[in-house]
Image (cartoon, rainbow, N blue to C red):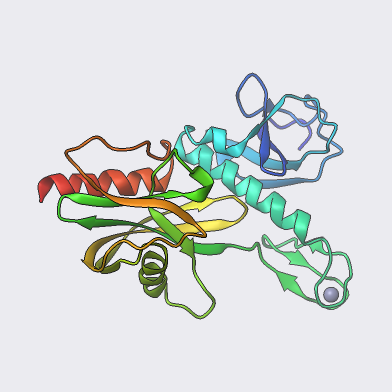
Length: 254
Ligand SMILES: [Zn+2]
């Protein structure tokens, strides 16, 4: 591995290391990565891609937040998200939850294995839903407290244990906005490594109700007409923006 040319995704929390604004490409020796915990996570442009866990004194390049890398082409963006999620998983699962023995990386699959009691666990993925709601030629967009006064976006939330995903979509929209929806359709998905979410995107139509905000999460929510100026929207590379664009397209055809 030391002499093989590869892409190296060095991760520190939610940051990855860039050299000259790109993922470092070269040999482990060249980047002095031999002492790192290294795992192959995929291929990119016919070369292997490795996750390397960065130490805090890393001086190879510049660490940037993963959120600043949404503009990358899809395949590379997905590998970056995979690396950050796996790094978070390893960092938070160092010991077996049954017997407290240190976990080891399994050799035959991507899992952690306890050689003392045989316990085996797989990388954690937390499913969540994200949904764009249409009412005639209008789209429901919310300004969440974490984006107070800036971005308006779709509604979203985590799937609860024992809950069918379609119910999550109905529940989250009702809890956050007071609106009942119908005609829920699956649209697509996006892994979101903050830290281990898998966002399942849906389109839906308004059924009944008036906007009533969940004040702990939502600062404002409104119906925006597709022919009138829109507020600031989420950035390119997010499933939220894809859902909004698709809904606006349907609005303009209706
Ligand atoms: Zn164990």
